[in-house]
Image (cartoon, rainbow, N blue to C red; front, side, top):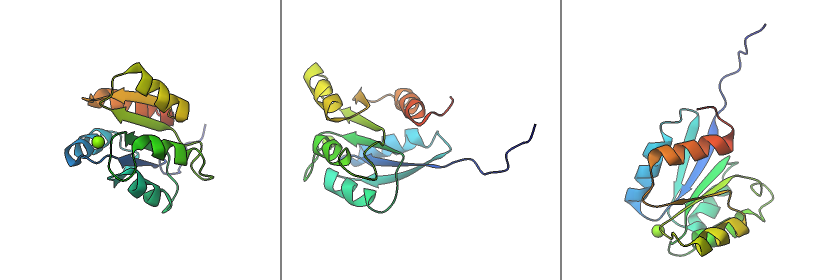
Length: 133
Ligand SMILES: [Mg+2]
């Protein structure tokens, strides 16, 4: 048996959220996954711009944001040649089943309702990245 000498893989995560406090909560939660490197954006358009700077492994996005909302962002990402298969977690205050269905229909992989629980966010990100707990 040989041991791998390659360094552990890093995963790039984009967090798109207009509330600074909420964004900090998400970044803090994600800091408990050592392999994750987080980039932050404060609306959908800012998120799209950040996506053009490299390749990302997962996207977490709020829905209600100025300039471009999260659902429009999901729609745009799913038609982007580089990121169309990237896992997306939508995080929203909307608890209506209709909103969840809409997000999933647009291509989101998961839907988390605020207030968030760090453990739930971490578990979902790990699951979608195929990381063991
Ligand atoms: Mg918001």
